[in-house]
Image 1 (cartoon, rainbow, N blue to C red):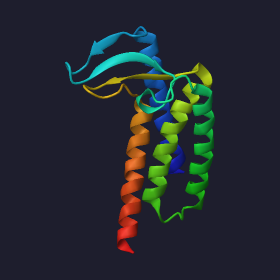
Image 2: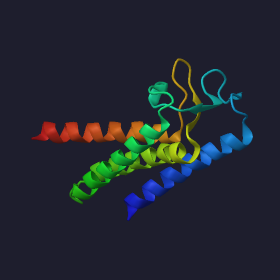
Image 3: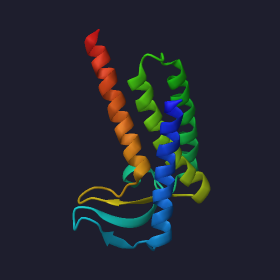
Length: 146
């Protein structure tokens, strides 16, 4: 099934990118990729987005697990004909899984992508944001069509 492949590929890309950063960039270290526009900056995040709820790793990990169960239920209750919605849900699940694995396995999330005036993030965060944005657009268009 293509949706399982999307989840697996997203999860592998997230975990591989984090592993490469941990192996090649010391904690707190930074490397310019595109000058000041994009840098790799190895940090540990014990909170959620923008480091909200710092030092709440276990609670956030459990929340992620509950969220994944709800997303999976939503996915399986979504008719097969709504492939876009199922695709967006798969992308969100891949991102949620990536950060949840970090929280359970490491006790924190590895973040490393830094843009000016933006919190440091990772591939899982990109997947979460893109999946949620796609889902919001699809639900908006569906509602508008009614």
